[in-house]
Image (cartoon, rainbow, N blue to C red; front, side, top):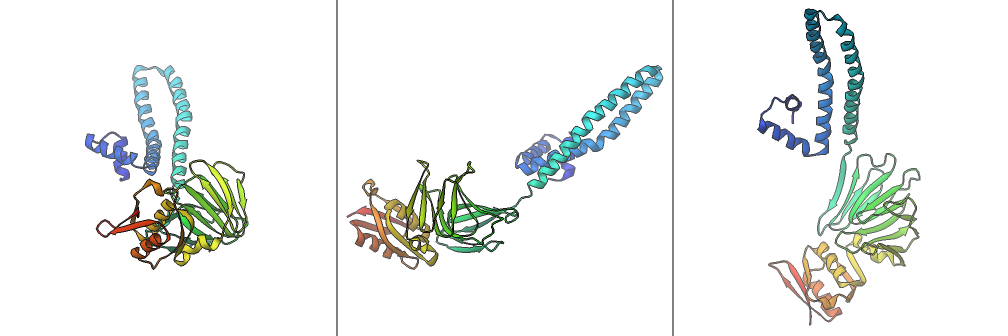
Length: 325
């Protein structure tokens, strides 16, 4: 939207269709609202002096004709009072929205991996991030200025460059955030899964609730923190970290993994829909290895050999159906 069009709208010179278009544009985003308010405040300030001079000239002429010199002093006094009140108010409005506009200049930067894809990203501080399938990290252009903060959707492994003056913070959609100075760790935070898992490989990480400044727990190497989204509970277990981070090397290692969680991993890695046909499988867990190079047929064989399950695959719908034998 051009500035001339906004001024035309402010001066009420447009027709109904024009006004509707401008209003829709203003309501489209906070940036548009801030820009409109800034232009309006500036326009009013710019036109105030000329309008005041015109008003004064008219009034002085009327006063001269009516020879009411005594009325000039109160009028001038009121105009001075009005200018003292209105001008600073408009100026502060202009400065506020000008400042708001500059703060909204923060640009979000996103790195994403699609289904079936793993990706490596090097951030500008040298930190390396491995993204598992169907994952995303978001940071802004002020990353590494005072702190190093990003949001994670999905699963990622972080090799963080140590900097004691700039903490590295990972925020998850569950409300749990992870704070470190320099370390290697894995975070699994898919919106489709019941838990958020943080596994420490080397160094030290602190776990925080999004609203709290005090750490909930400090992890040691080979510890995994599991946060239940529903119960809002945190549990700590000792783990073999190589099993959890093996996805970086193209292998999924399952150790008594619930079948529904196993299915979600297969869907992300192989871009296939997995349907568990019976509720009787809810208590079933799977242990085994799946390589990135495996075919859909290989995966079904692994399931059938290791359990009393029967799997069928439809190419038309790209769907695996798991049933009992």
